[in-house]
Length: 64
Image 1 (cartoon, helix red, strand yellow):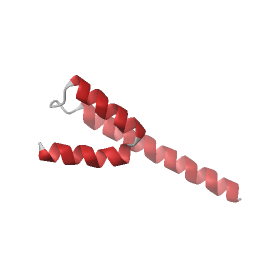
Image 2 (spheres, rainbow, N blue to C red):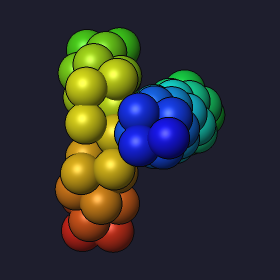
Image 3 (cartoon, rainbow, N blue to C red):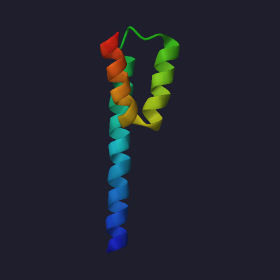
């Protein structure tokens, strides 16, 4: 039973990661102010640590 709970928690973490990364990726693609290289940089960051870089991206966009 413990193993099932652990697998369920791991699955939910992976699904949350995928959802956040896809939303961040879509937001990056819709931003016309970013250059091609900046978009690629943010896309890579979105795939690796989407929640952390989402807040850094928002802060950078607010400062600009």
